[in-house]
Length: 628
Image (tube, rainbow, N blue to C red; front, side, top):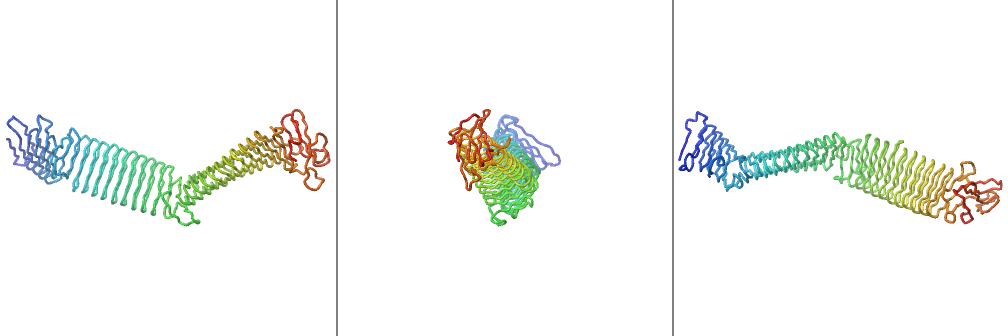
């Protein structure tokens, strides 16, 4: 047995005792005073560090053999390197560290455990009076005690719990799960994807690199996501959340929180309480919640979503009023957003002078785009939308909606979608699509394109040279002023040409085609079609003034002259009669000239036809082809 004691304490010398012969079964080493470095090596050793700050190595794996050592740090802040063997490690007084950084496997160590530890070099160890702990390069389970602990997981996927005290936990590399426990803790996940929990106390959670999940717990915490896409939850307490870079998801939780998005595209929610939320850079979505909140979109194309709020402020009747120009919604103040989504109730949403995207969500909403090129969406409910000035896009969603393109000579796009909708383009060359159900479309001024969609629709081109498409359903198409193109689509449609020369196609079904004034070209297409002339002004006898029927089917289609008074010299409404020859008042005849069939109708005795209609092809007509 060899015993070494450094007694003078004046020299900072280190002592190393090795197993010199087979008859030596263990060493007793006492460091006494001074900052000592002691190597126990193989054998069953008893090491006492003495006073001051010592570093003690249990190097059983470095030499032949292993031992069950007893290591006492005594006074001072000691570092004890646990090697192989079932060791007793006692830090003594001071703030002491046990490290298993040399372990060849993961360890399971709890500083509050009074029995043997598990795994790797920690297997069988008894640890007493130690405050700090370092794991191995492998996956460890490290648990603190009731005092302030500093723990480092090093490599591997570690599980760490601080328990009581103000702890510092570092995950280093690996996918770590870390819980600060009670006390005001600092928890740093390090690299890779970590899960951090603050627990009770004023905690600081740092995700560093990796896709991390941070949850603050009770009290006022600071959460920093670091790089990559993280999830941050403040939970209880007045918390401060910073997303950093990456597409982060953040929720302040209860009480008055500060939520900062940072870079990239984040989703942020203040939670309950009076919160401050700033999206920062990127295209962010900020979800409004209860409380007197201040919401900022920051840079990028940002969205503020009020879907989580159900209160009604009773402004403008029963509508929640969301005003982008004023930046107000009840007690909430918001600025720097390009997109607004309303609540599940009836909202009154108005944009500002910039290009806005306004979504009504659920409820029967009133949405006004105002200036700028806006995108409006009604969502569910019976919505009323006005694009205002600018080139706007409006979508009614489900429900019976009213859509208006707004002022200005701009090209708006209106889509009724599901429901019996009313669409009005007003100024500009607009595109209107009714969608499903029975819709009413009005083009307004300029050259518009109208499509009825499914079901039975009413389309009015109004002013301008319009294109009207009835699509499916039994539709009514009214060209209005301008040179219009009308396509009835499927089923039995009614087409009315209006004031100028129109191009009219009935489509499939038994259609009614009314050219109106102007030299119209009418095509019935499939089905038994009725070509109706309301007055002598519909197809006048002047060069280029009469109508042409492009595909009249003898014995199937008919020409209806019943609304014209056949004899102006006789009181009442007289009917025409079909004749082979002659031109007296009240007569109708047909003849073929140069491969074209002409119809002449006379309403007086001047022998000059008052109505002239041309039909493509050489046709033989009879009275059965007319309605008088």
